[in-house]
Structures are given as C-alpha cells and as structure tokens.
Image (cartoon, rainbow, N blue to C red; front, side, top):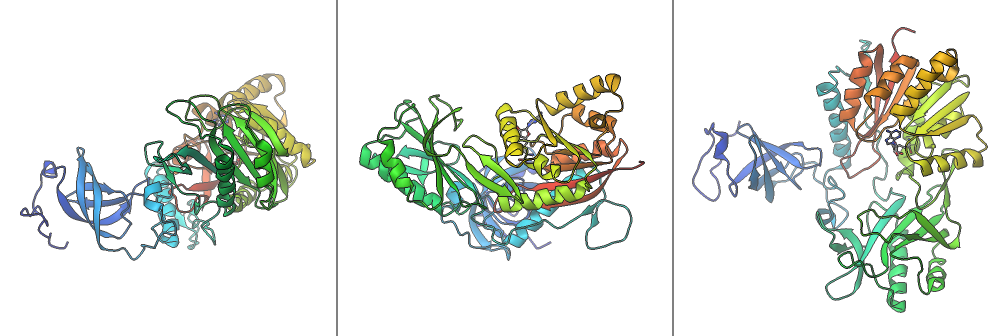
Length: 494
Ligand code: SAH
C-alpha cells in the first residue's frame, strides 16, 4: 500500500494508527473510492474504517472531510476530486447534484451496469449463500448462471411518467421542479433528463395558464392555494399524452382556457383534475374529474394493450419492461397447456402477457382499484383465460390451497405448473413461500426489485426442493441505483 500522505491541514501521520477512535469529526483525509453503497455513495477505507462519501465515484481519489463518525464507519463530505476515476462521466443534467434523484449519473453507463450486476451477485452470495457461474463459461457445474445486466441503448428520457410539484418562490413567482433533499422547498427545473421532452412544454403551458388567470399554487404550510402537482404520462407505443392537475379543491377556474392551451401538445388525449384536499405528502387523491378527452391513455407492452388512468400503477420504463416480461415468459416456458399463478400482479401486466401462452392464469393483488384495471385490460384485449383476486398473496393463496385441497384435491389451480411472483421490496411473505412449496409448481419465476430480499427468498426455496437455474438482471432505472432481476427457479425432482 502507498505510504500515507500527511494530512493537508497539518500534522498527523495516522498510517500506523490502530485505534478507530482516532478519526474525528472535521478531520480531513485522502481516500480511494473502491466500492459503492446501496444509495450510490462512494465508499473508501482507511485503517479498516469505511467512509461513505456522497458524489464520489467508484475509482476516484478524493480529499474529504469527516462529517460524522459511528463505531466502525463514518460519513464524509467530498471536498476535492484529486484524481478523477476513469469511470467518471459528465452528467447530462446540470441539476444532478442538487436533485439527488439520479444517484449515479456521474458514473459511466457501462460501469453502472457492472455495479448493478455486482450488487446482485454479492447479495446472492452473502445473503443467499449461492455459488454462481458466469453466463460466458459453460462449465456445466449446475450452479445458477448469472447473465450480464440488460441495459438500454439510450439510458436517458426513458420514464413515461412525471409528477412535478407546483409552488411559489421567495419573490412570489410560480415555480415547478423537484424538492430539495429532505425538504419541500422546490428547486426550479422543468427539464428532467429521465423524463420525456414534452414534460417541459406541458409545464410551461400550465404555469402560463396559472399566471394569466391568477390561479394560486397550493401552500403546504397554510393549506391554501389550489394547484399542487402536475402529473404527466405518455404512452411510448401510442404517443398518447395525459396531463392531470392535482388540486386542493374540486373546481379549476377558467379550466377551458387550460384545455385549449394543452390541446396544442402533440398526442394530448386526456386532461383531468385529481382532487386532493388533504394536508399530506401523498400526491394523488382518489377522485378524478374529466376536463377534456378521455380519463385514460392507452399504451402497449408487446402486443398487450393497457388503459392507464392517472391513478393506475404502470411500469415507468416501458422499453425495459418489455424485455423483463419477455424474459419472465421465457423462464415460464409455457406451451399453452399450463396453469399459472401471478402473485403481486398489479394491473395484470404480467398476467396478460402470460395468458397468451398459458391455459389459465390466476392473478392476486392487494390493491382493489389495480384489479379493476386488470379486469378491464383483460376485457379490452379479449383475454378470457385470466381470473383476478383482490387480497394479500400470503392470505389468498393459502386459503385457496387449504380449502381446495380438502374439497377438490385434484383441481389444477392447486397444482399449477408455474408460479410467477413480483413482490414489493420487502419480498415474499413466509406464508406465501410455504404455500408455493406445497403447491409444487415445476417452475417459479421470481421478478424482484430488491436483490437482498430475493436472495433470502431463493435460499428458502432452495432448501425446499427447488434450485436456481438462471438470474437475469434488467436495468429498469438507469442513472439510479435500483436494479431489477428475473430468476428461473426449477423444482428438482419432478
Ligand atoms: N407485477 C406488476 C406489479 C408489481 S409491483 C407489474 O409488473 O406491473 C408489486 C405489487 O404488489 C404492487 O401492485 C402492490 O400493490 C402489490 N402488493 C404489495 N403487497 C402485496 C401483498 N402482500 N399481496 C399481494 N400484492 C401485494
């Protein structure tokens, strides 16, 4: 190891220091960033103590100041990049550091993908106890194969949905942008590099309308004013555009002037109001009031059509979603005769994809309105071999199984060929996994947005007669630290 430099501010040479208490707040030191934390912060080690440094990139040599010390680690602020990492790249967005929405925009995209692959591998190894095989080497050891992350050709402007808060600046001007970290102060910015370019045009028209007609932004502190947020959605396959103003009331004065302006936006299909009169951080209320056009836009993933209202949950990166679902479908290996459960099904996006190749699909989802969307989407696609249930996967599935096994033990829905799960970050509930094991499907396809809980759940399934065959990470959120995976899990003794 390189001999330690003297600290710039002075005097100490701590290279021989063993004592971890040596590091104190406000001390400055040099660090080589050798790893990245889950939030994309750089991690460098000194004398066995790890320091987390926001805005430092993997490979940077940096000069930092300690802000806070814990027992075995510390947080430090980046003061100067002494030698930039070869993986550093100029962030496209000038607001990158202030916004914080894109934690790793300063990291070269190829390196972002590598970082994500390593994150998945580390979790599978450390939490799941798996030994892995690289996709490139076919040694046939029967270990789970991990594929390189599927990235995007153009890792910007991929989001089909944006929600911009509306407020007032110090001088009383109407502003929109993003919230500064840990506050509700709006930093003005109408051009997010992850969103579509139309967002800016729509925001310009909405603010122009508000200024011309004296419409006040909502003030969180007093609960007064009207316009809270602008929600914009765009169907990438259809070009249809939705604008929805979230308001603190039920009526927008001069609404016809707003709709007249917004109709000039190419693809504008749906202009609505959403009522949110509560003093809350939740952006949307429950009620939609139509102003012009339809209450929804239409979009396609593959050849399945979806109607999306302002309240619908819909994947935000449709290009990568299609790749993810195609992989899930490939791993399900359907021939047309299979019975499939799709747990945590949302608005039925995966269920409808699977239904095209299966005999029968059953979807389960906690949120009632999402199931309403799911049923409607099945109807508009003429798909009749799906049935949806509202409830918790860990309650609906065991209830079906336990009741069914005493009354109709041979029923196909109790012994599905494939079970697909796509849980939220906390992963699958233990009762859900136990029932999956009892149902003994030949394959389980696990779509995951958190590889730590994925690793935990895979470990359980592998202790119960299953083995992991392939893991395919997919980059659904370039420039951020989030990573999705699809996993093929096979029953060992059929
Ligand atoms: N498969 C869908 C949605 C995945 S997001 C898609 O690809 O679009 C995860 C979904 O799980 C959300 O819709 C959430 O409402 C639902 N959910 C959360 N906890 C659940 C539970 N315990 N049981 C069933 N669904 C749940």
